[in-house]
Amino acid sequence: MARPDYDVLIVGAGLSGVGAAWHLLNECPGKTFAILEGRDAMGGTWDLFRYPGIRSDSDMYTLGYNFRPWTDGKAIADGPSILNYIHNTAEQNHIDQKIHYNHWVEKMDWSSEDATWTVTAKLPSGKTKTVTANYLLNCSGYYRYDQGYMPDFPGKDQFQGQLIHPQHWPEDLDYTGKKVVVIGSGATAVTLIPSMTDKAAHVTMLQRSPTYIISQPDADVIANALNRLLPKRLAYQITRWKNVSLQTLFYQACRRYPKAMRRILRLHLRQQLGKDFDIDTHFNPSYNPWDQRLCLVPNGDLFKVLRRGEASIVTDHIDTFTENGIRLKSGEELEADIIISATGLNLVTLGGAEISVDGQHIRPSDTMSYKGMMLSDVPNMSMIVGYTNASWTLKADLASEYTCRLLNHMDRQGVDYCVPVVGDDVKEAPFLDLEANYVLRALDHLPKQGDRAPWKLYQNYPLDLINLRFGPLKDKAMQFRTAHRVAQSGGQAARSAA
Image (cartoon, rainbow, N blue to C red; front, side, top):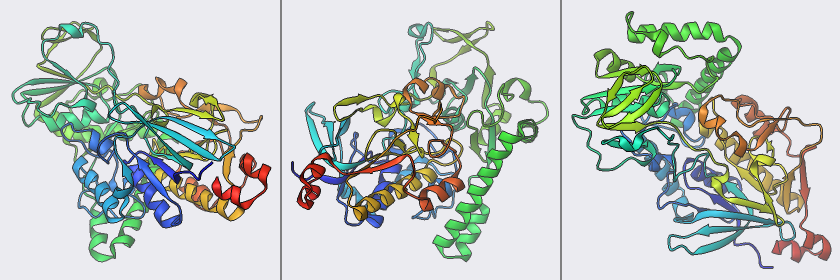
């Protein structure tokens, strides 16, 4: 069999995919690679989402790449600024020349005999194209791009206005002078609401249950001062570690001392909303802090529009949609010209592509995650999955670095592939330790994690940094193998053909 088309194939040209390409260029300079992108543009999430106010929900000093300083004055950045950051990174490193657009990956088939992945991608014409590679680096994210989560709202066909999901925002939507109801209380809802009050007659946030929401300045005063005094890269690394440390301490405090942290968060809300606001109804979640992801609002923008009366919040359950809006279980009716269903995402593993190993179909839910980035019994494949309690890119960078270490190690050892194998003594646990609805809906489709290293997902950047950047590549779980046909022929020529 001929040599694969590429040494490494990256799936996805978003934040993770462009970052992975940079690591390959710099840490595995001899490797050939390409990026298959299903859409017609790079940027992933930051190109797909176009709703008003789209922004990061964590600071850019940790959401940015570890190799490229974020130099903008705002730490909580808007979507176009983040997209520009991704584009500039790709263009300056000629990564944009490696991207094959409109290649939607549908199947990934591994052959141990040839140590080769055969990837089948669908083209806009409806035809398919196959590409082969020795290693797959899946950077397709964790949610479906073609479909957001839209509940089957009773009576929604009666509604005479517009019903919109933020994932599919109409470019020509005019909400000037309109009554808008946003269903949801997560990151998308708290971003949309203050961004629409400048034109809308009124915006109402309708939530079934409250969420923990905290305010943070959009500019990092310390970071901006360091940028004036120190070289950009040094200032960036200091700020990055400052923010990582604060995030880690805050998360650990929430998990260990939930009652105390709940009181602190409540005090913060009272300062933001004033003494008369009904916090007990609208901002008093039934769960502990960080059982679900906290929402961040820059400069308290959500709280400001609530105080000014430009927006309001209603905590209730939907009875039915009506011609003119939504009737609630309490009997109250919310009038609306536009209803926005900010009800979340549909999670999917590996972009929804089918996967097989030596002709055997693999269900991701039957596998276990190795170091949070590989799947048991699936050779030569990494998947980039970021943190739920910190910025996505922190883990994405580490996973790409680890993959490069693996590739270089296999070259030095003269082996063709690696595969993590679960021992009989490892117990299963859900992949993500979050009680968010979008996670709970997808648990049956996600891989599992184990009860111990290297199968346990720690959601801890400092610990992962030590393990992934400096830890040993060889352990009881990771097996390094030579392709079947190489073993049969015993020749170097056969190995190079793999």
